[in-house]
Image 1: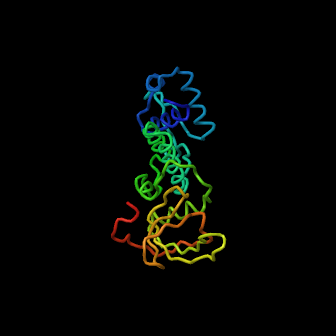
Image 2: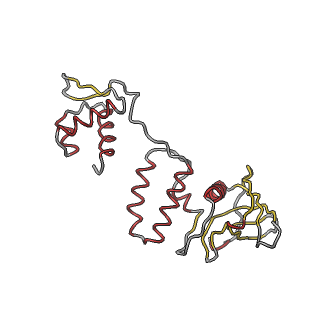
Image 3: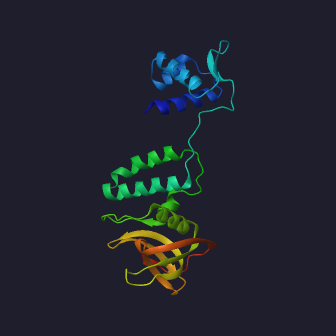
Length: 223
């Protein structure tokens, strides 16, 4: 196993499976010495409170309280989105050689948890270009990305420049991308009845509506 945590997780699963693995079997499985397995068992009992016992008749270990297992950290939807965003950025900047390793790491992080979206769905609403990154509010970025993903109408106010007054728009966001001029929300503006690109750093205020929309026909922005 690559780390001790990996081994502890696998050891706990092996014991919980009900096969009554012996010390010899566990040593062979994890390619470690008996002393290491004993230390791991001690940690599972004392640190994580698992009731792991030895059955002399079956010459193996079992979990006397099957309802107890190793606590798994819950990954929120927002956290998973940010991990995927970081993955896509690194792949874009570092080249495709990163993608396999990062995909494996992402699978380990996600595990069997349900975050509501697949990486493919998330990647469909964000585009990256190799360019110098600008500072954008994380809250704004994530909220708008979720709105794109869920196809919700965004009511926003944005300012073209420092001298102009803010303009209100009802917007159907399709995806977020990085252009030469910074991060933009791309989609359909109901207010002006046309495809539109709004710089994220020009947005003064916004609310995400409960109203869903169906993406309109047409090849907007080369999507």
